[in-house]
Length: 166
Image 1 (cartoon, rainbow, N blue to C red):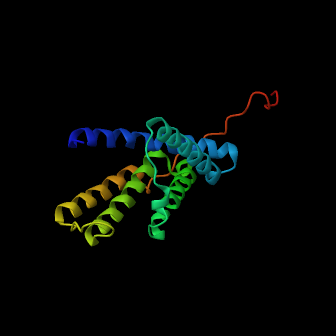
Image 2: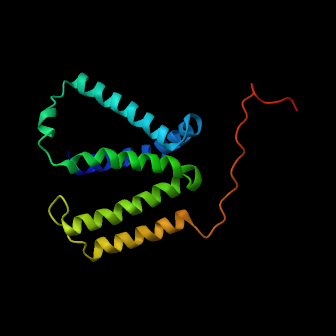
Image 3: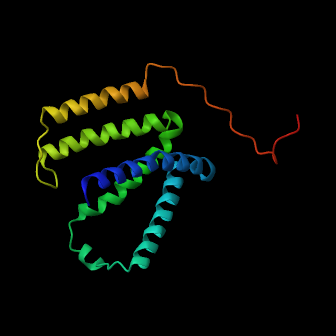
């Protein structure tokens, strides 16, 4: 894939993440919390991926996975923790703040993982990459604005079927 289309796809996918968080937060409020919402999200996602694999006749080699080191299985658990925490925090911090904070964490971890060559060839964190991280931190601080008083929470909408006449 060429660079520009890859960048555009990455940006497009990035636009879906806050929407997923907001949807999961609403789902979690209705079905039992962020872990239940994350479970449903992963279940629907697994079904969608399964349908894709069947529709595209993608070959699978499940026995090959048995010969891999145990740590390769951690990715799914990390994804579940990420989605559950995202679902938990988005009603408290808002979509923009949680996205900025998550990206800051991703950038910090990515720079360290790249620098030390964890699971890949090392790519040192030079001054331009560190400057980018500092600028990102400044942007996060401006978006999250922890020094501001958060807006009051809106009242929960009442179901017209259960609302008492006034």
